[in-house]
Amino acid sequence: MKVRPDPRIQQVAVAAKPGGCCGGERGESSGSLHAPVSSEGGGEGSAGEAAVIVDQVSESFDGASKEGELESLPGFDPQRALGEGMPTEILTDELLDLGECRPEGFTPESVCGRDDRVEVTNTTDVPWRWVCKLIITFPNGARGGCTGWFIGPKAVMTAGHCVYSSANGGWARQIEVIPGMRGASRPFGSMIGTSFRSVSGWTRDSDPNYDYGCIILPSPTLGNRVGYFGFAALTDASLQNLLVNNSGYPGDKPSGTQWFNAGRVTNVTARKIYYMLDTYGGQSGSPTWRVLNGQRHAVGIHAYGGCPNSSTRIVTAVFNNMMNWRNS
Amino acid sequence: MKATINHVMESWPLQLSLQWPGGHEQVMLDENVLIHRAGERVDPGVLQPGQHVEVIMRSTSDDGRVTELNILD
Image (cartoon, rainbow over all chains, first blue to last red; front, top):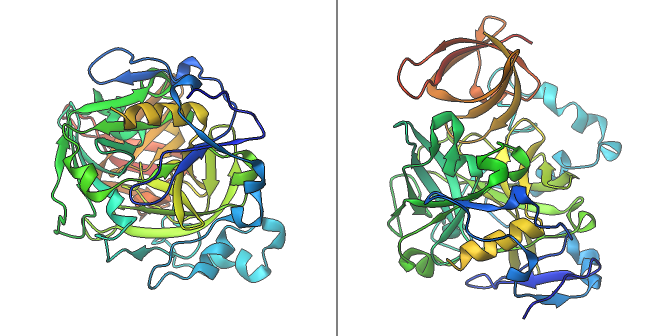
């Protein structure tokens, strides 16, 4: 079924496995900067809206519960994290002074205020097992780490600069995908991907607004075993002040450990989502997701630090590319 | 060589988008990069867009990673 989105309507599609579904609504056209490109060379069709098979729900879905929910994780202090995402006009003096209370020199700027990150210890559970440690080998021989997340049996979403790095010679040579990694433990094993996707806005123009990519694995075995996130393209109104979650594999923590943080979206632009969630190098590519009525939908791909930290926003054109990659 | 940080990409190690006087470039930091601010060593996580930095040393290997960096402000 082909559906042209009504700007007042949310598109919802793709049930997460298990649970969840996804959506998208922003009426962005599939501009050429979202034109998909492949590590095998050339483009692979358009990011047009017609590629999406959608269900629809009414805008009334934007009601109070639209605010989203936080994942529950032992040790995570939601009140503290939420304070860091508050609009500045309602911050108290105490909260405004937080930055001056932290130990000098040891709190990275991408950790906004107090470091609220907590380690995920149950990485074999949903949604943590959908999140993958990525070990990247670039064409110049350099190695790096990022985070990815399953969106389909063979498709692992991540940042564009994790699959295509102009600093390191272009398309990655290979990326090892390790879902639910915890320290040295690889509870689901791993798989090596050598086929990658991104868009021309990233590979040609290095435009941070288009910094997203995907790993296409050689087999659906791993994705079918662990399941995958749904994803959604939401309106500005739906995203503003939304409670979002993020989990990934930061480089400042013990190797192979997954860390979670959550808080509010503080700003939304046409192609980016900003927040004060604590992140660190290594978390590029990690999912930024909302929980709503027990369903999880990724709304962004974390990519940039600097407080506010930011995700590439899943707008309609991104959503459509993800759908195509998911069905690879 | 002095530059301004345009963007901080949170791979590990970090990748930076740098604005030089004559253009821009994306670079990757070495995992053991030495970063100093006002003479004190600081964590790579302090790097932010808009900061003026001086690249002191880069790897001589093909990857050209930044191995030493000073934050100027």
